[in-house]
Length: 202
Image (cartoon, rainbow, N blue to C red):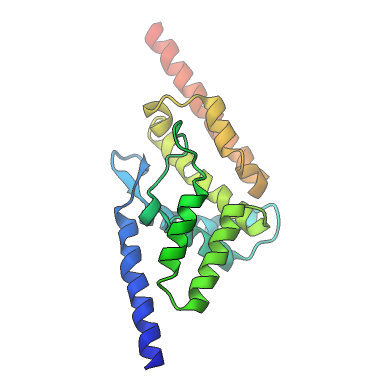
């Protein structure tokens, strides 16, 4: 009976996290008009961790980082997605998300729920090498999406590039190598956009 009770709790959690597929993000899929959902975002980050782990500033536990990127947005089932460049609500709405984390991870057997909670807290704190790299990857994906979409949310919401750089600065903490690459990509994108303006004015 104990195993059955444990399984039922695990199944309840599995059903609950299906809701992540309905949480829409502001960013759109690469070269697309369709908005990404949180489940797609988390999957893509997990793949990026496996592919890009070698560029971390410090040795990392790849399995733990994978857990971080897969778990970090589950709280948005309750708290919703907060746009990184939102000017009315802080992106780090940790109090609201902490309540959500307790409820959702609380659906699991205590040992798993506590592990997930600690991993989520470690990611949010962003102090360990694992968390720094996870956060770097979390910032990297939407940059690539926006560049592929002609500016994406930067253009749609008139986000100044000074603000963009302030928000993505955490990439340096996890990977200076990836940061240098991102910096080049953004500068190349900005140059292309300036050239388009020059052509249109000419």
